[in-house]
Image (cartoon, rainbow, N blue to C red; front, side):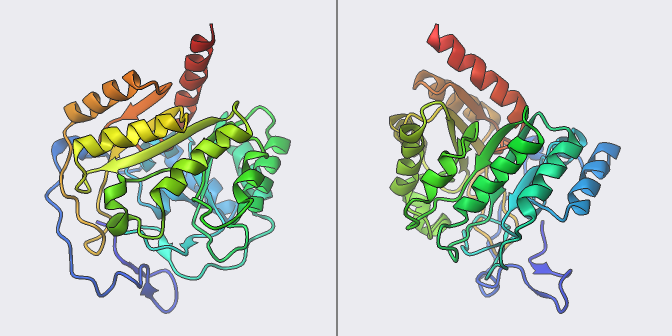
Amino acid sequence: MVVIVDTISNPPRPRHPEKVNRPDSVSPAKPDWIRVRAPNTRGYADTRNIVRANGLHTVCEEAGCPNIGECWDKKHATFMIMGDTCTRACAFCNVKTGMPSALDAAEPQNVAEAVAKLGLAHVVITSVDRDDLADGGAEHFAETIRAIRSACPSTTIEILTPDFLRKDGALEVVARAKPDVFNHNLETVPGRYLTVRPGARYFHSIRLLQRVKEIDPTIFTKSGIMVGLGEERHEVLQVMDDLRSADVDFLTIGQYLQPTRKHHAVMRYVPPDEFASYEKVAYTKGFLMVSASPLTRSSHHAGEDFARLKAARAATAR
């Protein structure tokens, strides 16, 4: 379990100040199917060194992703731009909360250089929420996309964005930079938003994804949710329908894992056969690509999944 106090800063400060005084939420013990191996390979160390050398942050580390060992061993990292501190305080998330620093003007180029050093054929770029910025960081996203295109013309780019809530025109700036995949996660069913994702609005997120397709129908759209937060099966199926109404191509469903006792508790560990059932139903609803398993995360196997996504679109166009 991740420690809630950041001991790197001097003096130590709470990583999640808004959660410090909350009572502990105890989750049930993890089942065998949720176990992963500790990261200790040479490939993992090489990736970590490149990330450090370029002064970058990754969501792999900041969010405590269970797949970090597997992905970094293959030199696959999801870069998190605009700092490591988020302006929101979602009940599920382990990224630090607080007032972020100013944007680093050199970051887009530093990300592009790291992509080149890692030799990535496909890269995923995400960010913290930056409600403090007039455009929510949209132009910074666009600059990062352009820098990668310039340095690595053959690399395909997937972005995982915040919702740009109340940031008029921000989405258009990002979409017109033409990422190959535009991902925005719903995270949970609408009935859980007040407790899980209180700073967001479910139907705004649906509309965001729909708007991407209106701006550029060639961009693949993607979204994901976590299960185990107290949702019901019929609510998950309704989310699928809502996403298809927005013409979303790719759906991911993974198990929520509690970062600390101050975060939302795991209400239930969903067994693998239920994930398989969700995947089967999602395909019948028309998604081009579905990934549903306990350890599924938005950017896990993103490169391989992008190749399958393109093939699926090509097949439907015949």
